[in-house]
Amino acid sequence: MMQLELSQVLSFGAMLLAAGAVAGITAGLLGVGGGIVIVPVLWHMFTALGIDEAVRMHVAVGTSLATIIATSVSSVRSHHKRGAVDFALLKSWGPWIFIGVLIGTVLAGHVRGPVLSSVFASVALIVSLHMGFGKPEWRLAPELPKGVGRSLLATVIGGISAMMGIGGGTLSVPILSLFGYPIHRAVGTAAAIGFIIGIPGAIGFVYSGWNVAGLPPFSLGYISLIGFALIFPTSTLLAPYGARLAHRINTRNLKRVFAVFLGFTALRMFYDLLF
Image (tube, rainbow, N blue to C red):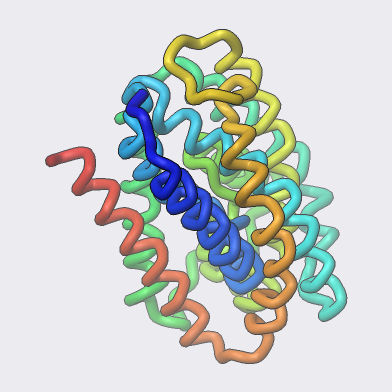
């Protein structure tokens, strides 16, 4: 790993604090757990620090999942005060999301870093295009499927979210919207889904990254403790402000903000993979 001057260390530290602040606001505003911001920021920082490409994306994803746990709790509290969390849905989806996270974490531990980057970029771009150009009247069905269909949907959300290092909102918000859910209720519920994804996901990345070569200093498996320590305070502090903002702007603007974040991140990831 390259040697850094004090000014560079301070610069990276400031970037992590700022990333945490943006992630916290984004988590409350969009219900995405902040991972859509944290993963690419960590990826670029680990690249600059000379971290082995074989573990770079794994550590970015694992660290993001760890920060999502605390950020989701803070965000859910704010959304719950406004009645925007569907606990009945969480009860029916929760076990299947958990199973999906276990599957996704196992898969992530056995694939190369570029594969995880490809998953992140592809899913983010698809969702971004839908949220940016989709019509409000578009519906797959008037309500969520029941039985096996509902269980499969939750399992896929949990699995892909764990591999991407995000809190579930990236998938659950547009999916819920396609089944007739109001956007604010979808965002509030997605924030709670992030908590279900974050705990088993973070534990899984600790286990799969245990004693792996090439990890950054002060790592616990695939989780960077330094990254977590700097991102966690600002993300947790500012998540409630994002939740308040989510209830002050209209649906169309909320979807556009969501689409811009996802689209920018996806294109940047594809650029890194191709060039």
